[in-house]
Image (tube, rainbow, N blue to C red; front, side):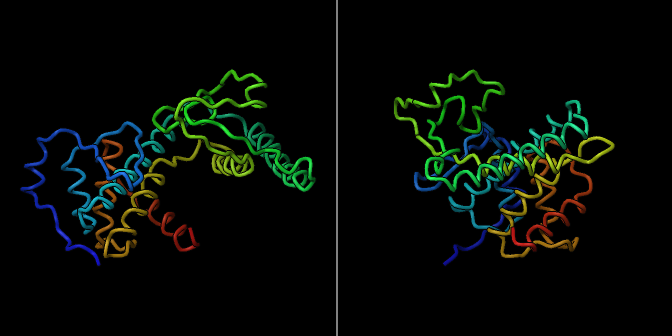
Length: 250
């Protein structure tokens, strides 16, 4: 049974605006992403009010996670757009190579001696796997023996890695950036809207839609401003794309 919904009033938001940046400390049973970002408490309250969600720990944790994922993705997109674009030929060669490797990997895994190829175990916090806030080195120096004989120390978590989904994600990422002439597509707005829509759909009693009177529009604009510290302008095109993904069975 859902808790009684409460909305943040302007007076409450104004009173909270003088508080320290908000970083939710969730109960141990709720997962949280710690990417190093903080958000003013009055922004969290305002976004929950615009959603019509309850103000319990699950809603707050989900909102903080959505904001951090959106900000990480947005900043990554902005960084990529600022770099020089490779030629269409280079991108195509890269895609063809990845696709060929994926096909060969699936085929060779059918043989008993190669059934585990492409599966590795690594400790979180190293050169291969790191928490979001830490980041990974772009060109790590790792000895072959470290892959053949991995070592684990301390209380760090150990994770298994399947290279095939990583190759597929890499291929999809490259395909989305191949646009022939012109600069790379700006995916920053779409990424922010994706996470905003996901949170709103889960926690709001109102289903989001392209109707300008739908409360998701005001929520999305405020969510975008909290993440990017800029005014969003028009978000109509990005909304249609995100809703299209939802209809196709995201």
